Amino acid sequence: MALSNLFSVFPAGSFSNSFLKVFRCVQLRQLNLQEYASKKLLAHYGINIQKFDVATTPKEAAKIGRSLMADTADELVIKAQILAGGRGKGVFENGFKGGVKLTKDVNTVEDIASKMLGFRLTTKQTPPNGVLVKKLMVCESLTITRETYIAILMDREANGPVIVASPEGGVDIEEVAEKNPSKILKENIDIEKGVTLEQADRISTFLNFQGKKHTQASLQIRRLYNLFNGVDAVQVEINPFGETDKDEVVCFDAKINFDDNAKFRQKAIFEMDDHSEADPRELEADKYNLNYIPLDGNIACMVNGAGLAMATMDIIKLNGGWPANFLDLGGGVTENGVYHGFKLLTSDPKVRCILVNIFGGIVDCAVIARGITKAYQSMNLSVPVVVRLEGTNVDEAKRILTESQMPIKTAENLDDAAKKAVASF
Image 1: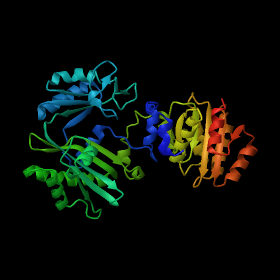
Image 2: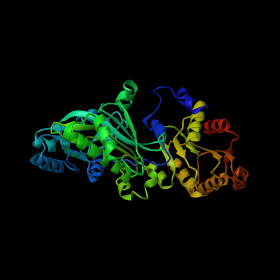
Image 3: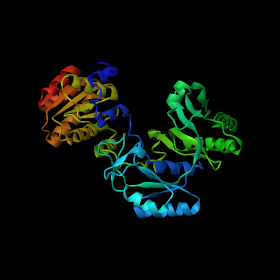
Image 4: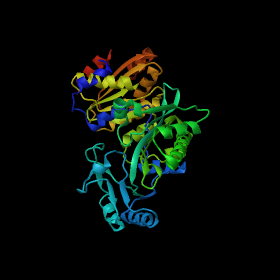
């Protein structure tokens, strides 16, 4: 079955939160930065942001609030730091509503913080039981008089970075592009020259910045590109890129996506990665360059290639089963990687069968077979294992499995493998 038909197999409403994560799976685990960490990067590159600090206790939050109010702030914003959107409309497990709060009374900061810190916040983007709030960002509140949008991203068509800008900020940019394309400007960037003053001025004019705000916006645009280039980003999105009632141009919210291949060059940034909301099994998989996402079923899948993994889950469901995970071994898998893959799969108490589906291209089937043998010998596997191997060195792989005398069920094709997996318990 074609992957485009996956939703016909899994009807609307049948997806769990964890299953939906599969559709966002990429080659490597993406770097996740909390909002405050992204803001620190912006500030490091001289980009205008709200003044802020981070608190881990209610007393720290109150101290930060007093400092900001003594400086320039007339109003404070207290924001729960979790890796999910919709915080303002979220609900805490103690019944407190809203993960983003405004206050003009500094004496209320400690009380507000005490109702956020240490409690789980549930939003439309969190798991059903919410996410534990361990940090708060306390910042000055600025009055936004006008919102615009700007983003820098890598673009295949342009063979390099582009700037996308719109005077319609604070809203869904895709909706603007669809309904009013004249409000979208796309500017290609020459990687040898960077963003020129002429380009920055042109974008600032398109965004309708006037007077000294035009000059400010032009400077901020060039600094945003310096950030984009300096941190090996693939996307820097500012929405809103706004004006304040004090005639300032400020980046109010930032989304930064990084090139995982630049991890060796951006060690300090990748050390800022927040793992607190990740499943420990996903973190363990990342150590061995495995892509693992736990699901809700009982048939574990070990596959090479994201597309084949999706098809495998598709066929399991068609035959009456339910996948327990998404596990892509990747093209550079080793015997040790296969072994640790088995450890991850069997760490899920719901797993009642393991289905190994390998189509060897870059992957050597013999490596997979030796890894399976190592897992059997070292782990005393008690769950049935169904194996389907095709491609590079498949005959040698089959010989290894046969001579191992392990109680493995072999399959001729994917449908046969799924049927045997479903019938194995």
